[in-house]
Image (cartoon, rainbow, N blue to C red; front, side, top):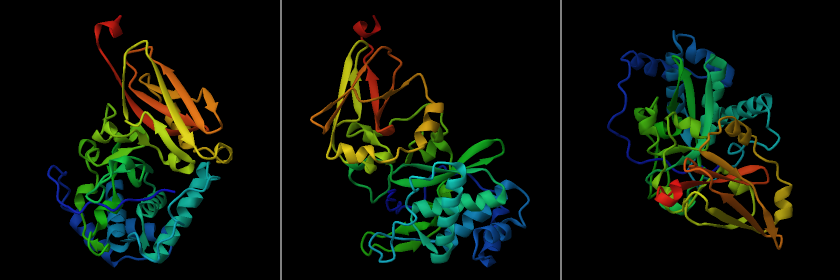
Length: 339
């Protein structure tokens, strides 16, 4: 299940892009638009728009003005819009899931991050704008425990003017309070088409491509723990070694890793995430996908990786054909390693 953390309390950041002045007209226009279905809503929101950029702006602003964030503890909070069913492994099925969740969000006028992201995508689909839902780790003022460095949020990317751009309609819609745990609607333009070098400061995607940056950054959270993909939470993983997310080694070393699980047989019956296929297609010479080499006493899963190149940077740990964790490999550039 994809759990969305509460979003940042501070709403003003330096360095955000300057937006076209005619967006003010679009922002006013969408306030008078409504519909019960995603298809009709997309039509009404974009019928007066001349470009894809204007369409995206209209969709983005309508959602931020009309959908409330469902804070933890709210009695209406359900898990129905927080996950992709395991059978949704084709484009058609994913579209159906997005459509169903978008309809529920429109009906309830509330959602968590996954619902926001799916509604945005399905409206873009109907408007003829290419977009994607991105899963990953996001950190805000209410995020305090670095041991929870894992996929916990959803946002979007849109394709405009021959390039992809990043945005987060959830965080743009407002914030939640510490004291009363309630949603406060407060629009934040910072998260509309945010430059990648700024977006990465609080959004770290599962798929490295969606940083939209030439190199994969290393958040400081890696000092405490490896990054856990959303598939990690599906399994009965009790512990893992090493506990830190950065592994230092030299060329010629053999790195040993271990998982401990509570029910390996139950885990084997869980379907793997189709996300792995897309990541493999983009694999880099600096990535390694590490599979188990042994199972001890039915609970300990052991791995090993022989470091053969000083260029290797990332170890993706596999379990049941899923990527569950990502370690940063730091190769010592000493004389012995170079030899």
